[in-house]
Length: 55
Image (cartoon, rainbow, N blue to C red; front, side, top):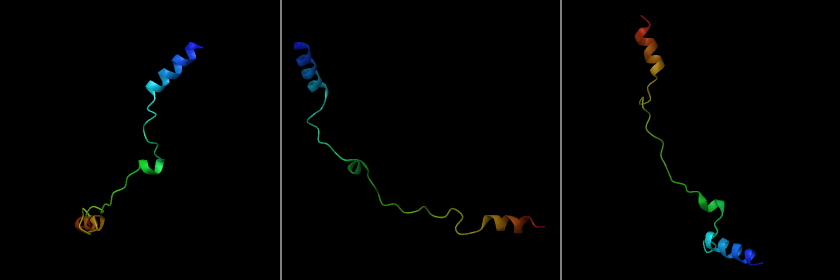
């Protein structure tokens, strides 16, 4: 069974068994954000368009 021993040692060299295990909850990050400012400044562009072109 020398072939099996060779495979086991080969696997130990390829697999990083010394790395710490982490859960999926630890893989995510979050950051506080604020919404961007209103590009129209609170104006109703559709109403302004209708008033401007109502004739």
